[in-house]
Every structure is written in structure tokens, then in C-alpha cells.
Image (cartoon, rainbow, N blue to C red):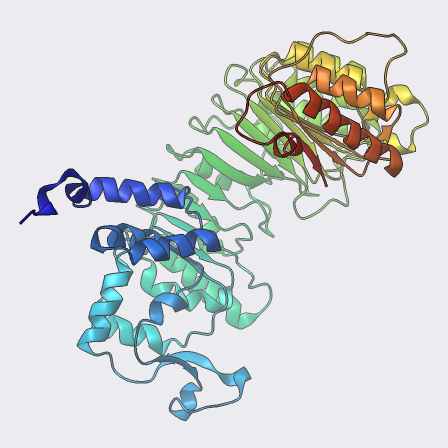
Length: 532
């Protein structure tokens, strides 16, 4: 009788590496140890089906399903006695407002084995104020030992009131911790924050990522220099102003590559300079009304990404001159490595041209990304500004300017036009994405003032501008950007926008019609136009 056990099709399922690879492709994105990704609902359903196919697929599918949990409750739910009840009423029914998750009986051998089976898959979980009674973890530790989650690497806690949930899981295997310290003036939360901070300090020799944006505990703020393996640190929204000693301690960390810090520093002198941050590649500075000394104090030699954000206080805005001077000092040693600048949720005190504000970055010939988003209503962008960017940044890949005061300006020269966009794309041969607000979508009076087509641009996003001559404009855009996806948002007037979209789709359909493609023409052209 024919035996199929030794056939190639049968043996493939016994290859663990192949089975894992197939399931990981299904999941598409699972994240790294320090940056786990929570799976979409559809992906989780697909993995659940994979787990039911056969034993070969069950193990790798379950490993991904349980890898990142949005709450510890799904894992605790495998215990037979885990339920929502009033802990003071012996597990009996009680009003909803008094109910907590408890274990109403001891753990059997089957409970312990089932918990251990699924716990070994867990790499990350969140704590979001789930009402889990502390007795649950006391029972678990007594029954299963100290290592409840042997492969846990990443934990996020969004409430100091629920920080007690973290205590059993703060073990040396943990590599990344995110904690939203919301203690404020609540005495009970302050005590809980201090206890959690003292336990975090025990992880100093091994922790690689520590994000405590609103850190307000003295013991933790004064001990960052002891985290010898730290690669990423975030204290950007701390209510306290960092002192010069703290900045130097953070700068001394040999493995630090990413840091989020407030802009203000106290206790420093005008001549002080920080010689640390030798391995830093990404710096995010949050604006504080107390000052901007941090920009002039540090000059990371290998910095690649700089992000300026609004932070806690925008009442006293930075002046553009102060930004230029500080940024110029900060970037003085990283001309060869710097590739990205992001100005997000920021505000300036005086109306100025983007050229003036971007001047410190024009020496960064390797710049790949320039983004200015939200709150930048005081600045204007013109075609001359786009030409200056094209000349300064030949390797630019993404330009995003989602602001302008152009809607209140009568002078059309103060608004970027299609001509400026085309010239920028020709100057930056690697440009793949342009996102502009208040673009002036009108055509030059000359018949053919534009250069040849730009084949590399993939996304052209235009918003809050004015449309004129929509039919001719659609034809010009399709000719100039034959491979670009066009997205338009809040353009006026509406009827001209509709004409523009209709003509653009027609022109592109006609141009692509002769091409042999298995995809219907209507579907192909629709993918090139997006309206938001």
C-alpha cells in the first residue's frame, strides 16, 4: 500500500523553519524586540485559522498570536478561576463599579500547565487601567514561581494607579519599558510612582529602552547615568527642568542612539559644551518656556535625525533667530551624517520665509527628509524657496510642508506653484514624496514652460490650494508625473476640483489603455487618484 509519509509534500510540514517562515509571511509585520507591533484584527483571525490547520502550523501561529497583548487579561483568562467579581464578597456578584478581576480558587495542575504553555509566547503587553486585583499575582507567583513570562521583553504602562501590575514582570529579561507617569499631586499615586521607580532602577544593568515622558521621580531622574546598556531614552515632557549634571550623565551613556529631551537646561554656563552623545543618531527636542539651552550645549557628531516639537508650553514661542543659532551649533559636527529634520506642532513668533528658517540645514547636503507640520502658520513658502531646497539638497527624498499663511496673502508669488514643484523634482532626482499645503494650481502663461516628465515621484499630495484651468492642469500633471499617485485635500473651488479629478482619471486611462495589463483599466487608473 502506498505510504505518503516520505513524500516531499509531507516532509515539508515537518521542517520547523519552513512552517515558521510561512506563518511570519502571513503576519507580514511582527516588530522587533524593542518595537513590537500589535497585529490587526484580520491578521489575528488568519493566524487563528493557521493554528487550527495542523500541529506543524499551530506552534508558529500561536507564537505570533500571543506575542503582543494589549492587556494581560487574555493570558490570565486561561485560568479556570479567573473572573470579574467583588473580591470582598467571596467572588459573588456585586455592582459593576466595585468589580475586579480575581482568582476565586486555587490553581490546579492543569491551570499551571495551561498558563505556562501560553506564557512562553508572550514578548510584550500593555497595562491600561485594567481592574486586576493584586491577589491575582500573589497567587500566580506562589503557584508558578517568579518567572511568570520567561520571554517578556517589552512592557507599556499607561496609568500609575495600575503600576502594581508591573511588579511581577520587572525581571532582568525585560529590555524595554514605557511608563506614563500621571501621579501629579495625588499622594497615593506619588507613592506608587516612587515604588515603581525604585524597581526600575534594579533593571539599570540590562534595560535598553526607557520611555518615561512625564518622569517626575527624583530617584529616577538622578540615576540615568547608571543605565549602561540604554539605547533609547524619553523624558521629553517631564514637569521638571533638567539640570546640567543630568544632561552630562545622559550624554555619557555609550550605547545611547535615540533620546527625547526638553529644550531647557538649568545650572549651565554660557561657555559650557557637552562632549558626550558620541553614538547618538536621533534627537527629539521638546520646547519649554524656560529656554532653549540644550540646542547650543550638545553637538552629536553622528546625528542623523532631528525633530523639534511643541512640548508642554507654547505660550512663549522661540524666535526664528534663536532657532537658527541653536540649531547651527547643534548640527555643527554632523554635516556628513545628517539626513532628516522634522518640525512638528511648533510655532514661531514672527512671520518669516522658510528659506531663513531652513538656512542652518542648507549645509546638510545629504538631507533626505524635510518635514514641517501643524502650527507653522507664521511662515510662507514660495517657488524660490523650493528652488533653494532643490539646490541645497540633491538627495532629498521627502518634502512635507503642511502649513502656510498663504490663504491670507493676496500676493500669488507667496504661494508655491506647479512650476516650483516640477523644478524641485528635477533638481532632486531621488524625490519620491511631495506634500504641500496652499499650493497654487494654476498654469504658467507660456504654452510649454515645464521641463520633461519626472518618473521617480510616487506621491504628490496637494491641499488647501486654488484650482484654475482644471482640464489643462490635469493633462499637464499627468504628463509631468506619469507614475505619481495624486492626492488632493480641501482644494477650492469644489466644482473645479471635480473637473480636475475627472479629467485626470480620463487622461491617465487613455494613456494606459494601449498597455497590456491583467488588471482592468478602470481599477488601474483609480489607484492613481485619492481624494481626502
